[in-house]
Length: 197
Image (cartoon, rainbow, N blue to C red; front, side, top):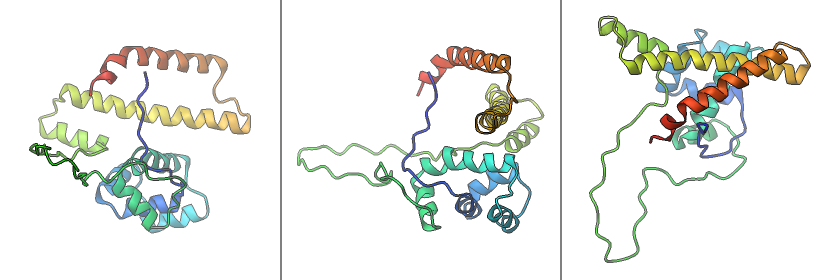
């Protein structure tokens, strides 16, 4: 069983527009600046020349695929800054509540919405652990390991893409079998956890 990120819209990916959305949002800026220290004007200049390094390109793509296309707010900002919508937006705004047409519907009390961030970076975790006296909770330890897993995933994915597109052999047959085996084992071990909502 895999974890699937639900896209709310099909957008045409553009690095410059993704950078602009990130630059204009405090939460996304915080996520991005954990890994990239360059200023946004400089990054945009480099992106215009298509000379961003692989790590920055991957981070931009991850934020676009994992965050921007999964939030109505970010989708609106992306389109506002020049992004192209290539498919329909598939949901109604989360804040809009449909009115019932039936008269006998009893109005139920609304549940309080808790805003949950879509990203929790390594630096924030390490800062919180330090504030707790250096002792991490099980959740914090798991989150740090997931951050390492994200980096491993990005690294291996980039190698696999390069092999497929350019014919290089960064990943040997043995490497590929090991990767497939580890992923299969992880899916088996985590399947029950992923069923929880």
